[in-house]
Image 1 (cartoon, rainbow, N blue to C red):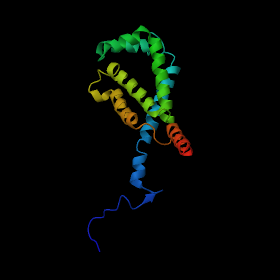
Image 2 (image 1 turned 30 degrees about the horizontal axis):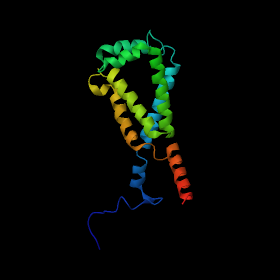
Image 3 (image 1 turned 180 degrees about the horizontal axis):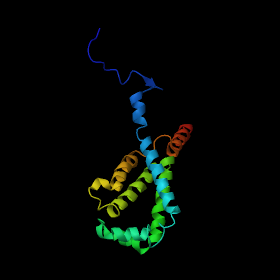
Image 4 (image 1 turned 60 degrees about the vertical axis):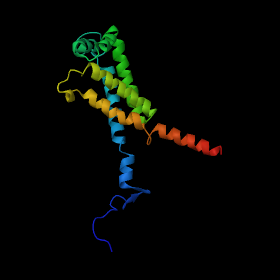
Length: 176
C-alpha cells in the first residue's frame, strides 16, 4: 500500500500507445506552423492584390515605405538595395511570403520554407520595424523568433515531407 504523491498522472491515459503528454508534445508545433503558413499566404496575397503596394511611389506603395524607413533602418544598405527596384522588390517579398506560407502550411521542404520565413522576417526587422520603440511593438522580431523552432524541427508530421519520408522508408525496406 502506498501513500503520498501520485507519480503516474502523465502516463495513466494512453492514446494510441502514447500518453496525452506525448501526443501534445508531438503536435506542439502544428498550431505555430498553421498560423505562420496562413499568415504568410495572406500577407503575400494581400500585397499582390493591393493596387497601391506594388508601385514605386504614392501612398501605401513599397517605394514610399522603403523611403520612409531608410533613415531609421539598422542596415540602410538593404533599403537602398530595395529602392533600386522597389516594384521588383515588392513582388519578391510578396511571392516569397506566398511560397513560404504554402511550403509551411503543406509541409513541403518545411525547414527550407521556415528558413525563408525567418530571412524575410529578419530583413523586415532590420529595415521596416527596426525603429519601433519599445522593440516589442515591431512584430517582425517576434515572427523571426516564431520561425526558429520550425527551422530546427521542419514539418515532421501531417506534411508532404512526412509522406516523402515514409515513402523513402518503404522503398528502403523493400530493397532489403
